[in-house]
Length: 258
View 1 (spheres, rainbow, N blue to C red):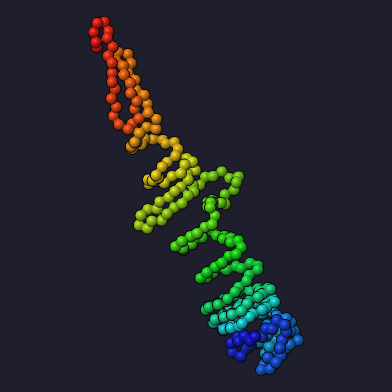
View 2 (cartoon, rainbow, N blue to C red; view 1 turned 120 degrees about the vertical axis):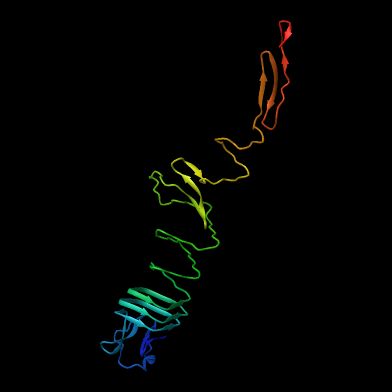
């Protein structure tokens, strides 16, 4: 595999050893330090091609390879790739260390396997599949998605609060409504109630105790008995579903009716 670094500089990597026939077109090649997985680079100081895994600075115009296998690569300076990187096969690094790596154009890789830690200030991808655990550390996580599917049947908010800490912060769901004010479903810690603010809550049925006055009521859950006593007697039941009529009886007292 031959990689063109720009100008007449070349890099040759061979996992099983160096094929010197492929180096026949190069002059002043030092093969005394050849090891498996080393890179052959042009040394500007000695004006010779050397095999090494220790680079001070590497400037690449375009990189086009089938498979790239490097055992150990250390760049004390900068790795700058100003053109395109096209790797159609596998990329394998046992160890890769760089003070600064910069790709100013395009990086295209079929498969990337990171067994250790991948640190990046910004990653943009058309599709990302995470087979293991995903941990996001930061103050803000934004998802721009038309549809969000979550397999968990319970969503936990305020998960970072310690079990030994008394709750003081409200929590809930807020909905952005463009030109209209946001609406919220909030658990209020000060009063231990769910609140929708000054908005209405609609439901077909409600199970539980109510406090306050109802605007309308079809009937009472249990009818009440109304009785008249003393000189006028009568009774009826009342459940709030309509008007009532009481049939009364006037008692006879001292030879007359009252």
